[in-house]
Amino acid sequence: MKFRIRKSRPVLARFAPFFLLCIFFFSPALSYAASDWADDILYFVLIDRYADGDSTNNRRVERSNPGGFHGGDLKGLTRQLDELADLGITALWINPVQKQVTQSFYASAPAKLGIPEFKHFGFHGYWIDDFTAMEPQFGSLDDLKHLVDEAHKRHIKVLLDVVYNHAGYGSSYETRRSSDGQSWIRSGEGNCEVDPITCRVGGLPDFRTELPEVRDYLLNANINLAKQAGVDGFRLDTFKHVETDFWLEQRRRTRAELGKDFFLLAEYWGGTASSLDPFFAQDEVDAGFDFSFKGSCESFVNGRGRTVAYGSYLGSRHKVRQGYLLAHYLSSHDEPMALYNLNGDKDKFRICAAIQMTSIGVPVIYYGEEVARAGSEWPLNRTDMPWGDRDIQPGKGKARDEHMREYYKALLHLRRYHPALSRGDYTLLSGPQDAVLAYLRHDATSDDNVMVLVNREDKELTADFVLPGIWNERPVADELNNKPVTIAAGRIQLTMAPKSVRILTIGSGKVEH
Image 1 (cartoon, rainbow, N blue to C red):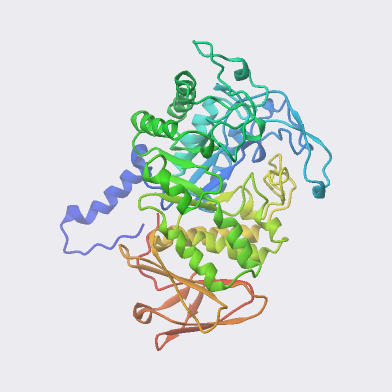
Image 2: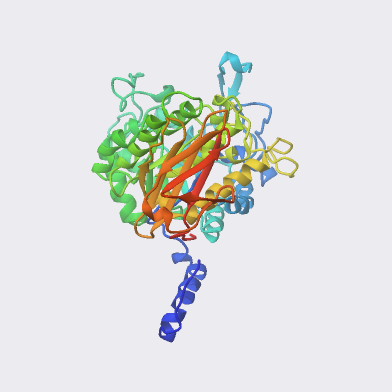
């Protein structure tokens, strides 16, 4: 943080920033603002695929099996927190950690991937067999607590993935009954398109969350785990498949038992600012995933549609209800990797990464994207974190792109340095041609101004735009590429290299978080 103090101020006032800085760094309770995620950058890790820190829990490891456990654990993830802090992330999302079903199930990948039938285990954490116990492959409760404590020391929040809708295949819950003899699990398969609440997603045993005994059990289990571990929020799996009154009860209880700032992020499949709004209106959650962002950017960089139409789409994302957030991503464990969808074109991928980090919402990085992790469709969208020559399993020896990582670091620094990128309004600029995408982000509180210019074409283009007067009053720099920029007579005119991004600032309102 940078402070400007005039000599004429009283002595106590002159030293107030120093005292505040000491409080910030030395008081665990005040080391970060858990109440506000608008400025955060979220990093999603599948624990089993990241880093192995304890070989004693590798009994079931099958690293050649795309559906098997590969040995990553909480201890390994904790040891790599400095890697994440150095990258610039401020929040960590981890998959569910409760005990998984022990059996495996045969699965078939898409034929084009050329993978033979494989055994699929619960390495991902979503096939829970006991909500009150930890999955030993991931580690112990103490390991989880230690991860959270160490993350907090680095001013990184921790978001725990939780499941309420279903248990794992063949789980012991399938035979459990309530005190009045009712099964905890719904009968039949149901149709998710007709009734998303009563269907069995993927054929998984679907909890009858309308039963008070079932509801209390699931809420107690997940909330107690959050209390013990000290996590900062929940990522809510299969949000669409659980009834509203359940989510309202969870909201009431998390606020009462975990604090009013406990964060709730909903995975509502197909979510957008519009489709999530009813849940925001009822204050069921704080945020939801924006499922439109990934495909829209992939289409844009592949040349589909007009530039102005895509620019208007980015503006439409600002229509989210005030006080609530969208979380936007490029890849996930449930969808094909963005770099794969872009046929490995890293220049196109860099454009999408830059747009992601300069757009409103909470950007979500899927582990390894920042080093161009190899991956494709399920199950190969869940490959091991590549560590190159570093002695870290399970991804030791797997290639990583350090230049891509430096590019991500630069983008994350810009986002954290400029509040306009996380909080600012949006203005789409119009040029003489439908070619260069250009938009302004402005935060009135800090008077921070950022301009983003994108050339998606394979050829050079000229960016030529009329600018607001404020851009004529101060020096302009391209902070992403460390280049000066000239503005004359109220216009910006510069040459854009093929498939490139320029991020321009006028040096006002910068705040390091």
